[in-house]
Length: 447
Image 1: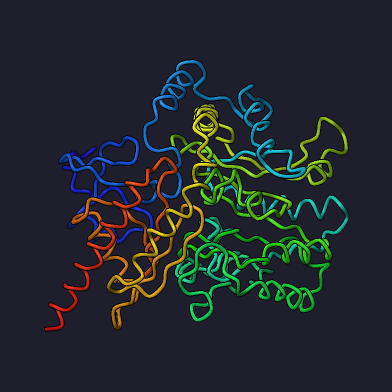
Image 2 (image 1 turned 60 degrees about the vertical axis):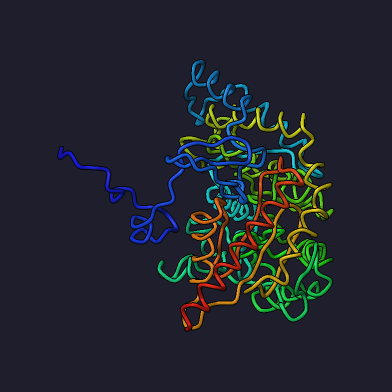
């Protein structure tokens, strides 16, 4: 084995321009509460909860202690034909948080796995009921459902799809719900756009309901730049799916666990889907964990036949991993003890008012807020789509000591739910300083 220096070349970073990163890396070495720390000691204000996932803030002592205890007691338990008691307790807690009869939890490790699991369960459920022809899956334009072949196929972000061939067959897409001309600078659910759900009727007429297994949507599209659902849109999707016997899946990997001021967006919007995909905030990102919560009739349809036979031929080596489960129990305790979901709901108008003050900042073309999330669209650089957003992310980190997420030329903000009103003002102040500097740099370059 050859010895080599740490030149940052061996690690192939995901969703990152690796060559640029090595020339000016953004390295993190510690974290606590609302802040990261860099190796040189700078404190970085986390305006994105890591990757939409550290909802209770970083390195919370109770979660750290739970992980330490679990690692010392039971490091791993195989989930095929065996199990450990805390996994059952966690499933019970999650089912209690979910609306209606969403009473059973299938565990995995990430949002991508949760989506692929839900799609497989949907197709298998129809087969169990004697409708094996229902295999078609309906996603939505500008949607992100992870990086598995199933999730990429139903997803609608072009850059995530173009390099990977034909993907799954039998997939169609609803139109996205965003119109800048009709929804610009919206707080909460835009009033325009509920009628776009009717396009599902067109798709049903085109393919016939007897071929369609499921519709999957994010209640709020997050990774594409924070697109809140139009008022009434999700309700209409539910009605159409019900009338045609199609399963409705909510991808709540981002919206679950308080981001929109409730345990799940399904609760906020009073819409009960047939399945909920979750991950990220369930364990406060302290250990990987994800899963699918399914309605009672879906589960019951599989619980037939000889009792020694496996009902669903699907699963992962690390499903319900003891460390992920321990982190999730501790995270749920924190959410409850500190009333963080209600806190997010109470802070939503304060957050919205503050972020919308950036309306007059340089380069800003639109702002959307809902819950403790915001999307800020920047004017793109001529002939360089995505470069403005990339420059904004780098400038925020290197010049303003702040972490933001970008999707193309959109900045996405999603701070931990523990943030204070002072930190809301600080995020807004640093955003404005960063935008002013970007605009000045562009003007200087033009001269």
